[in-house]
Image (cartoon, rainbow over all chains, first blue to last red; front, top):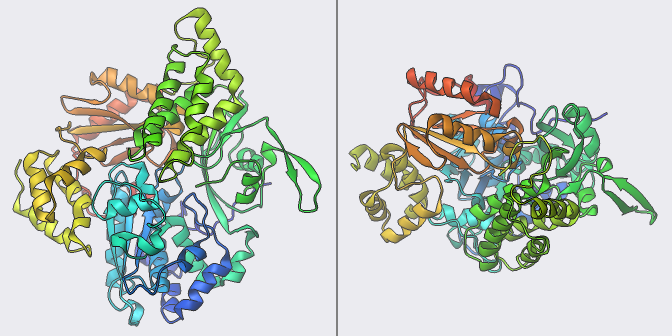
Length: 453
Length: 183
């Protein structure tokens, strides 16, 4: 039986909780920051590394390593950026932290800023979170008045301001170098690594750490409990908890915080989310935000155990941790699960996502700009009755030619759904196109789902 | 378009919050968009002048970010999320039906309404989501189009839907117990 283990989401939807600083302080808030500013910076960074915590924004890069790579010898100021530009379809975990528990983010930012000795911190929040922006600004003012942000934090010598910047409806701002370009005042064009590794040449070409909201909320926990103890929570390869945002066709969609490896995908979807809608059955899930490769619900995988033996694993038996999802050829990304049941026409679902990527490509790299547009056009024509049998291979060919040929990962993010969808549901595409060719006109799959495009 | 002294004062304040003033571009553009409704040449030249950059840079940002516009929008700006989680809950059909009922095609402005399909609004677990000015309506369904229209018309009649800038506190100030704080 799956159960939640709330560490980051401790205050979310809690009876009687609100976003004020008084509430946060009444639950011991900012006490960790007060202790942190008395500690040695190198020791704090070492704790983070020991925790083996992975970033929660999608790429899953170890946070301690990210801090370690900071160019501390350059003499340039170091900047900290909180990435609150949550825009991966299916991901909705940061929103509630911003709206309901802004002080936990601010404490996380200030602890991190102290540990990396940042000259200034920024929060880059997506433009659509209008009230979220007001809430953060209000919370920063409250924290400033009490000496937790600004000059001489908690009576120490360390001073750091937090500035909140709003995005304006652009997905690629979630990519760290794109975010940096936007924050510097321009189009959100991602920059090529090398040389533009944020840790060396980030904002204003100064060393910069860009961390996700949820990652920053972990920082005070790591400093308090110690890296060693945090590394023992959940699965050793991916310690801590993940906030899974489950959306789509389940009884109880929602956000569930689960200790890594403590339950399986099936337990999450059946026990906590209540299973499929009445009279339906699961067909496919996208595990970690729309960019990750899709899983067919009836797929089976051969998994090599540590002792060398092979076991067969069904999709519902995949444990909820990053390593287990890697073993089945996909990734947990930002933990936004999108569930689709037997009423969903897969070509339509793919057309919906391809339209998203075509809209969001920043246009710098030809393979991505042209590729996402053509993938969108081809999937759309398959849905609208103009599909050709060779379109299935054409789609895959376009996707294959994007991967590895772009500055940022948006290219892969757009290609993976196409590659996995077309190869795993090829029969459905071929059937749909064949039906259209034989009947003419709209050959929509016979089901009762909503139109998706 | 009139750039008032208050707007200019606020712009100076925003520029002071960044180590380099050019970084204030996003926030200044939001301010002007929300106070003036859209960008004309005068507004572009004003921002460029303030930041000390070429106007083409501001024009480049204006055309890059979907939230900025060069055309005036309706007083009631409806953004329907069309991305997968919301689409699975019927948002695409919701948007089309809403457009038909309000007699305002998706992607256009007609009278007091502007209706747009937008990409993921970041509240997938409560699909389908629709944002109207600075308010989020979650859990809408295709079957609820009529109810939704009644709701926004009632809110508009009482002045609760009045477009408010993110730089202004919501009516009644910041109330940490309000439903808006629940996300």
